[in-house]
Length: 142
Image (cartoon, rainbow, N blue to C red):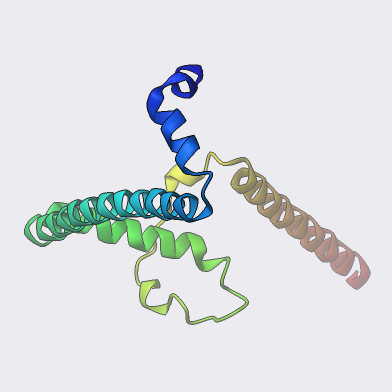
């Protein structure tokens, strides 16, 4: 930065911008130039992005295997989010109910493992309470 302050161009800019009109023109030109550069780069990348998107869609139409994987992933996400939307609308993912997909890649997550452990403990407790109720009923009936 020190080199910039020592250049003749920088000193000319500082001298010229002491006049408020020139300062305003310089500010507008600088901001406008930055905007044009940003807008141009955005337009260039959007075109590439659209072309890439079209290529992927074309490949999915052409490649049955890729389409099957995409459909499976979509169904797996629907199954995973079934528990999230259960309370708000029971028929949100009704069209995906025909595809019972168990997502093995998610089972490693600690929250999922904890949830599965709690379910197993509840089932075990329920079975034990049913046994004790059955014993009490058979002992009381004798």
